[in-house]
Length: 139
Image (cartoon, rainbow, N blue to C red; front, side, top):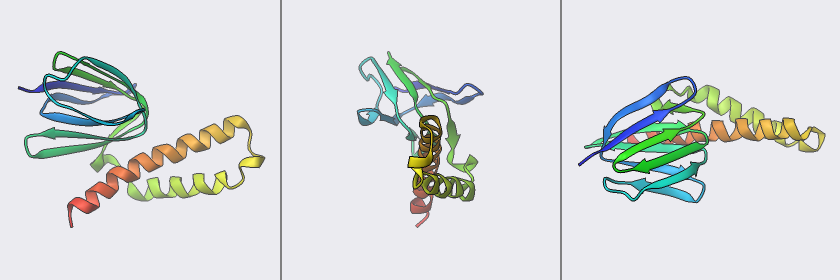
């Protein structure tokens, strides 16, 4: 038995197909969904999706959104969904460093600028987490 998964962003369908399991970063922690999972609706936080199809593992960086599970059909709606191979590690690292530097001057920032900087930092950390997993898989 499989789960019918669809990962959707405002720009694209990032993934669609049958899977064996998926791990998702929810606001209450990482959860893994297997076939016959109970119905569920949850918010997601930034992090990584780990999709398993047989022995294959597909890694994606995600940023926020919602997940719905209903009768072996699952939909993930997120702002960003990037597969590991789509992530530019150097750009993600540069964005992380720049955001951390800006946060050192948070007392000079407006609330909106602070929130934007935190969002950039969280997105870059999600991307780097996926890339780091790639490095550890090749050791």
